[in-house]
Image (cartoon, rainbow, N blue to C red; front, side, top):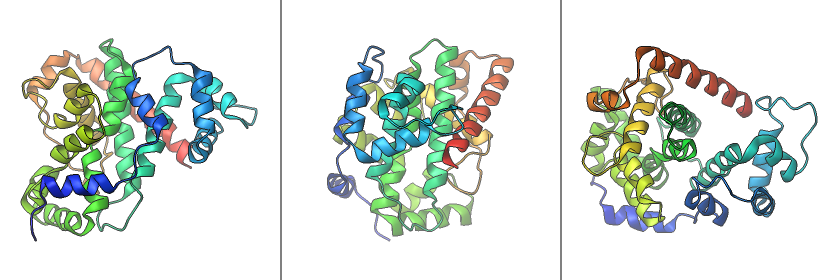
Length: 279
């Protein structure tokens, strides 16, 4: 099987549907807590798919409302700005990567893992008094390169998954052996092509090796959040492999055992609530 080149990745990414304008607006203003919620509601209302997703979330058990929410304005008022941003990002990204038949890969598991990492990253950021929406978004996007490979090179990626299981390799090892490229470099390339911020691009590029110079602290947060998701058994593949965690990353967070235990509990609880939405 021939290796995949960055040039091939760029060509395939250029064929993907563009992120909706509202998703780019949210990405570019993810740390802005002063967004006009009425303007945001108007933009969501202009997109039928986002409107449906927003109303579905607002009427889920997660928000426990006694009154049926029927308008986007009601939904945003109930959910708040932060949750609304998260829904817009998740729905917009999922729409760009339609599900396909790649043996060994389940899109549902992928998004559940991404949400677990996003939730853990947000909780870590809260403990460290960092911007929680930025951390959540980085966690949601961290494995976006895998989606490019799965949707654009499904046969090759299926071979990488099979090679991984047959030889007990890590995801990165199997990708590099079979594809000649990995989801980290592909994710970083996608981040550049879609004009993500440098902070977001570095978090994607460094979520497996955050100790690299120049990546910034957000890569460390996502790296540890990824490890927490794996420790909870929430992975994007069935093997439930526990990933190796950078000692430097753990030390730099300066979290006590009690804080780590609390983080695990809170992440698990958040996942249970998110699962209620998916039902």
